[in-house]
Amino acid sequence: MSGKRNRKNALCHFARLLLRVLCVTLSAVIISSVIAFHDRRQTKKAHDTAAAYQIHGIDISHHQGKINWDKVCHATLHHQPITFVFVKCSEGTTKLDKYYNNNQKEIRHHNITFGAYHFFVPGLSPEKQARLFINNANLKKGDLVPVLDVESIGKLSKQQLTEDILLWMKIVGEHYNC
Image (cartoon, rainbow, N blue to C red; front, side, top):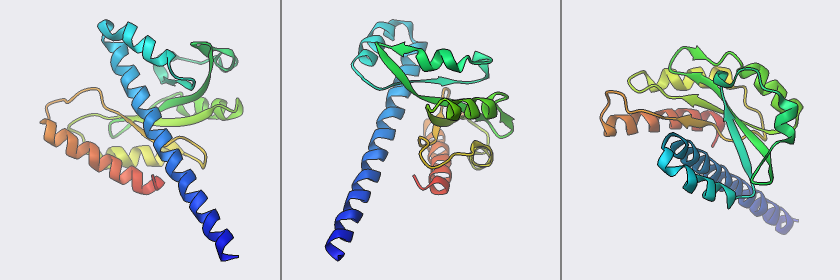
């Protein structure tokens, strides 16, 4: 009996490790895609890179307005369906995305894998930013790991920005055990 239990525990550990690697890989793909989107010289390269993957997703925020989720369910990128969506939950220490709750509900209703992200504002308390995200993300088992969107350094040094990012990740990571 203990042999079966040990094998089961090892398989569970391996599955969790594999899921974490997949989530980190997906986060890296999303981040690299966002960077490439903002740099027109990299657009073709990003297109070629994205085409090499069989798993595709999108990220959205209030900037896209009301989403037609039926269209998203039938949309494809490089002949592959959209299988996950990251949604902006929060920004800084006080801002919540006005469409977050509705988008989360619709994504779950349409059986698309859900993920949430926080838009980081350099110079504001990373602890307060982490708490805002945690208090509003409503992540559930099976959701993607939280993502931090960092688009500027602000007036911080690279070292201070790195420390603040790591603190946000530590607080959120401990909360979600990831």
